[in-house]
Amino acid sequence: GLSPRGALPAAGAVAVAAVVTVAGFAVPIPTAAADSVDIAVVQGNVQQPGMDFLGRPMMILDNHVKATLNLAKDVKAGRIAKPDLVIWPENASDLDPFQYREAYARIDEAVKAIGVPVLVGALVDHPTKQGYVENQGIVWDPKSGPGASYTKQHPVPFGEYVPFRQELSKIITRLQRVPRDFYPGDHTGVLNVGPARLGDVICFEVAYDEIVRDTVNAGARAIVVQTNNATYGRSGQPEQQLVMSKLRAIEHGRPVITAATSGISAVVSPDGTIEQRTKEFTQDVLTARIPLRDGKTLADRVGAIPEWVLAMVGVLSCAAAITIGRRGRTDEKGQ
Image 1 (tube, rainbow, N blue to C red):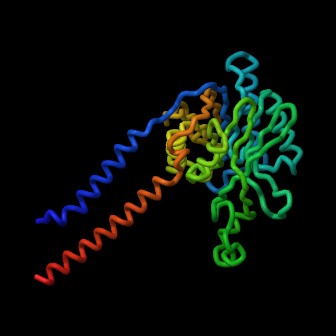
Image 2: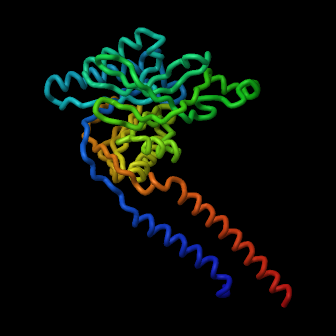
């Protein structure tokens, strides 16, 4: 049987787990907001899932333009209330609008038709570093055109850039399917889009604590996740990312709007409730009124301190268990 002394580490582990769990439930989730904004989220859809989701040039952009033009028609006919702003997903423009006039013209047509600012996701050639591309969210105004932008800070290795490209490409020929490296941005994605100050994070940046927290602390009143899940379509990844959006909503007390090229696009309230969501590989538009919040949560204030404390507790607990185990074996040998 297990001696009382031997049971102490197990009892301590259970007690710590219980305290951590109860403490989590005790943390308040603020949701009150002073004002709100009406948004529309456009999911244009892609030709097919997988690595070759792009299809022919301009197809994805045309899909998002057509969906936005249809939204404008519904607004004009009085079937839908006019939103204050529109959100397009990551890679909504599959061509650099600053390099291809036809792409610029199509985006401008859609933005002018809806008559409100649109946050456009596009891949843009780096202005000074030849061969590099930037993954951006661009604020496109119906009067002044493209303005402020956010560049993804954390490109995905082997997906958006290839580490040690020259050496590894000789061994792994599949890496040639990533022809250009994405260049990381150097600032948070707080953008004024119409009447709202939004915090833009792109795709799996939602998984990185510090990027979302820095964006909220820099003044974001709502969080936008521009994403392209077409490569991982009909897998568990879109659902996984949606759960991350729920976590971030609760963590920061902000609504989270996920705009995806092929799904899942969603509107998540500050308490983590999924208010609306789309199906995958369909063209759809979500409209919603979301709260804009300024207050800071406990997570915003303390940052990663609880994570480090829990990690240290875990390491010290393991060390204590090993020490107690060795002493026990020493006592047995002595007897």
